[in-house]
Length: 191
Image (tube, rainbow, N blue to C red; front, side):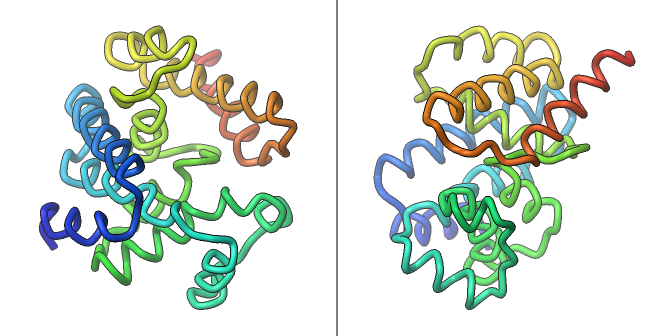
């Protein structure tokens, strides 16, 4: 399926605000893919679809978890907003006819990250944070590191931002995020 066709379907699935965000993520992901030598088409598709499972009510989330036989860990059961990546990967496969495991994984883990992320997973995770419509303290510094310095340094900073935010919201930090952050930190320290 062409990107334009995916966009037409996506427009009916998510809010206008979420669509603008997703298009911003596409823009950032393409740029990061060029800089870091990642497949641009895969980056575009994963970026466009990364939040396709986001605009669902709780009942709908539970419906798709059952329909697609999605396994949830105990934190995802409590924090259902973390599940939109897994649902989005299923939508990518079943609605958008994507057949690429790398894309599914990038969509699945774009919220929590995971240990030993691929380049595509890192790009989608990071693009979600630095897309042009994002405006929060430190975003310009993160963009500068992402576009001019080092992908892993930028990912580490993004994880640190995520962890601080989740703590400020008094929510549970998913262990995948901690593992991903610590893995990147160890990689950077061993260079």
